[in-house]
Length: 120
Length: 279
Image (cartoon, rainbow over all chains, first blue to last red; front, side, top):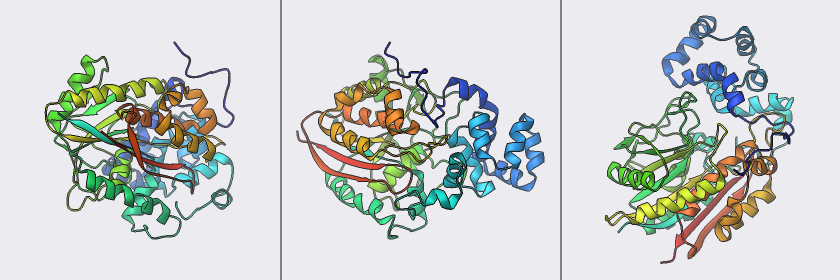
């Protein structure tokens, strides 16, 4: 079997979404996936704490959600970027806001690194 | 007999769909994206395919990590527009050809590609952005479709070679169909991009252009790439590019390149290649 990954050779600044991450992130990813239903988006918007109560989230996950700390949700809780993106309709934060957080930059600083940032 | 008449490799960046829906096609930074698909639309209108097989990945629209298939095939009359978290896009539902899908499923499974068959499947940006860019769709789409979903988001992923061989098996399955269908196949996703970590926004234009060269002239070289090599060079999410190899595996080597383009305005290398079978 040809190895597809060399786990001894980590890629700097990169998290590979594999079985370890998917197990760790199962709760938060399932929570985020629930945002594909309009009634769940409405419930979250109406009362975030009550909506979070209806899911078995850890206190750390809940705090990252309250803080809109996407870096924490992805890098510490196993959040998958495609799932975490679904929170955006309710939080008002799109991919490039999340990306700037991941890079430790402001939105404006991040945008300045792009060649044609009108295509956002 | 059904035959494969052409293949398209294209990125499926979701923001393109949003820009389209907001009517931003003429805005300076978006215009190069939309304009480059115009010759491909014209080519497809002349080619008159009956069916488009679209190889894509579901980003959490119809599929989740409770059960995430490595290879799946749609076999529905209609594919509704999925809700990815921001409501369904205002596009007409996409017609399927379930008889042809079941034919392909039977051929592929007996040829040892064990597809998950989906009779209910909503489609999302991985599928819709390429369709949206390549076909007029008001009031209805001009082709029937077969969605083929590949796991490229939760490792372990199928290898690049496996994806290429799936394409070869798709070509055999198409040619085993007695109906006179003209088939085009899309390989979607990529090119270079990374959406996690401090390396968010990583691009590699040289890698992308080399991939565009080789997908046309030397796809076997690309089948040797490991996921590690693709991710190191082109970013963690660039592994989507293995789906282009399924498209290429379904083509012969007697091809004419109709169109090629590359543009990397934000966080993803947006590539496009259109290849037509000569025979």
